[in-house]
Amino acid sequence: MDRENKESMEEIHLRILRVTDDLRMIQRELNCAAMQAPTDPELMEALADAPEMETIQVLKSALDQMRHFLWFYMQVVTSDSEMGEKFRQTLRQEAAPHPTEVEQQFQSATDAIMLRYIADSKFRKPN
Image (cartoon, rainbow, N blue to C red; front, side):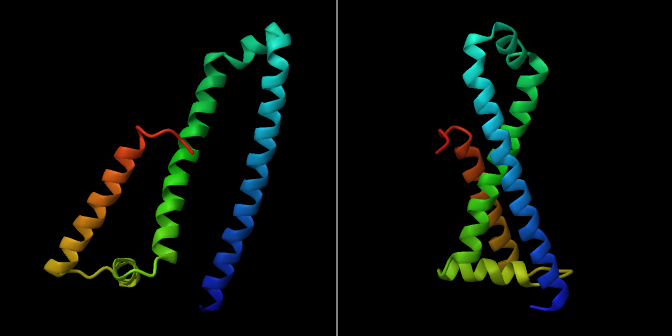
């Protein structure tokens, strides 16, 4: 790994740590609000307000999307299977101006798998 890539990965690592810490703080604050809401009608009303719920829904959607992406990322990075290796090789290759028929079929298959997984997961309960 060259120096530029290493610095980029270090920056990503630090951002992940910051975001993770922010998410934990948000969770604690929302948990406190949820615990106080039953005894505070004004707080309950404010928490159930449309803009508040929309913001929570946007966060939930982004986290769901990230969870799906991270699952896919972990499969690609940690998979020792032949299919995982082929997929990593495809990702490493520079975009060829005229992909071969096999590359096109492989890309179509991986696209279809990901689309199927994402579509199916919308109807699953979160872990």
